[in-house]
Length: 582
Image (cartoon, rainbow, N blue to C red):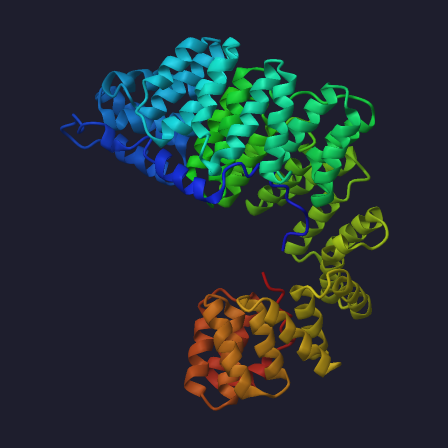
């Protein structure tokens, strides 16, 4: 269970219906149907290696092998396109620009190639050429969305207010894109010095977003502060903080205004404006777990603005969804130390190091972060999580205790800390302390199912408060009916209370929900044995044995299979621990 707030800072500036349209339109940006067949007469080992590397999310290796293939067949359109896309994913934009130039010689209206060339022109300040590049791209939803935003910012780079606004009119009459239209209108008018127009557009963007988009809130507060309206800027941020009290960007901006300093604009030039648009697209696509297109647009956004901390953070988050821990760590590492996102990026990087079994590095990173800000709670929480995952409960409890000391008087938001420390105390055999923590966690969390489950199960294991304990676990199941671990707790509680027939029914449901968990299968085997279904019991125990059980359970399972439940119970030296759920 994650015990900290993980800030997802992407603005929801495309609604769900629009995301589906966007996915369908941009997915074809690199479609092979745009090219003719390969001129290759023989299969390429390099090409197969490149395709394999791309499939396992190794774009740098894929790029290397695609380039080797091109060395043998330089004009192969399929390989050109795949090499081009791999270069973007690998963040080798110099190579991507070169390949884009080759692609448009074969397919002049290739959308993604034209976009990359346009972005390169904007970086160089050649705004007319950028608009011409987009104008040469294949028409369709892609051109209407991505192309229009790019052309609008290119026009803004020239100082051409009317041309920029004309391009943004593409979104009029399309409610799903109202936030795109209003937000980028506001930023462009702000950049061009149209204070009245920017004020109106920012207000429209705030209304359209319900004042819940951090990017729009930051941009509006920045605009207000730069007009000398510091109090209004603070009020804008304060309203957002009422909904998200711990958001680091909003807190940092609020504190800056409180100190009497105006906020910097989010966008200072056309390149940063395009980066903002690409980031918006990436953040929308990131709502689809594991989206490769999200990575694509975030990579482009970072190319346009290398110091784009929010984009680095969201890119890392996207990699985490794909369990690409090393890539996530690298992206978090690019968040600047001056950013309000830096502490959270260090914590998340440490967690990802832990996923890679690099605990010493993770612990060192968190200790360094704690030393930089001794009053920060989060590094100690993360340290506690890492130690607890490694079953070093004494050290974990100490870290949670330090975090709670820093946190001050108990608040509802602290429930997970008391819960985590309670688990550690229970595992250390300090039940009185554990029970106190779990009871407080239950109160602070307003009966969170994880706490209901753990405390109720612990009482049943000790043979105390039986009726109350069973009711607590039943409530936990009611709140989380599809959590196999909590359902298992209910079935095992019924088993411990002697209701074997009911236990079988509940544990069968738990196995359906978590079929690959060794302990749940073991429990079901025990229940089968108690109701006389001994063949099925041995089958479940055998199944549990195949699922990599804890070392001390292997001998017990083998004894049960050979000699039956009673012999297995005689060999058991400790009771099974409560299931903590997901």
